[in-house]
View (tube, chains in turn brown, purple):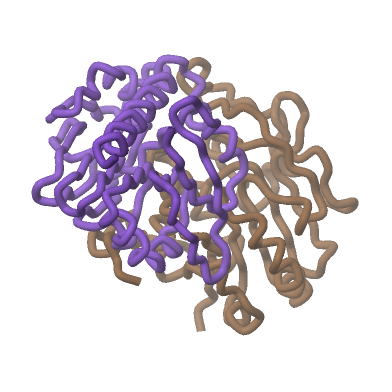
Length: 215
Length: 209
């Protein structure tokens, strides 16, 4: 049976657009955050928690999230998060969305661990477009993968909960769903391979029939 | 003064985008499991960018009843579920944002005097970042703003229900807008467009009284 990723979802359209796109729809499955339970998570090998998630709702399911990690599985968290459920402190920062117009060869990142499977071989501009805030505190044994030009933590990872928890203030899933940054196949395909060892195939096509739905 | 209810999806920073003014007072209700908000007592229902369209679909009966009372719905988000009477939002990635321009189509409400479509089109000189996809409008709805390809981007519908429905094709709009750009002209355009929406809702409330 092919491995699948549960995309925890609070009804936001960009999450939906990503998960329904032809390229990813066989690998990702939407899991409505208000309906999460232990049974619904069992059949997934990895979870993705996108930017613009409902942090209060996630906090109510904190035990489910850490049980998933205890089972040795992977969780990817993007954008903001809440210390109500994650042992880290996220703080907001202004979004620099225009460096690629003003100085395209110098994204505002100072460090990237190019040895991480997601970042291996990625060009700088493919591994860092913009970020939503920074982490001012990360778990004790976390490995920092990316920092911004001010030295703040943007991406980190830890295995101290059993499985692998990776958190980043980048927003690849939301932005790929939005489809206005054209190179995010690079990051999202590698993310998918890292999570479940499956390579997405084909184009990111949006099917009109998926919109105006009655469910 | 208008009384508005904002449906919150628990997303950081929402309250700062909608601050009370002399024209409108806001109350925020958060989506939870088995969400069934009480809409009575409000003149305007606001569904902001980043909303929960699974929850909205579950309360579509309440939305329809709210509009039948002649009240105003403002949705500035991509509603992929069918909860907005008569109008449908479609996500689409076949058009290039660099080719996107917004232009006024029909303006019986005088909104074009209150904001700049040019400023909405460009942010730091880059076009087409304000909204995604397009709206398939209800038959008799007014298409206020369209894009390069003639697709509806802002729709104002007074015909499908007894109420007023104001829709953007996912383009964010609020009293104060900073989240999607730091370009003064671009976020002023978004804010001015939103203020024009509020003015329309105020006119409607006065007409109902």
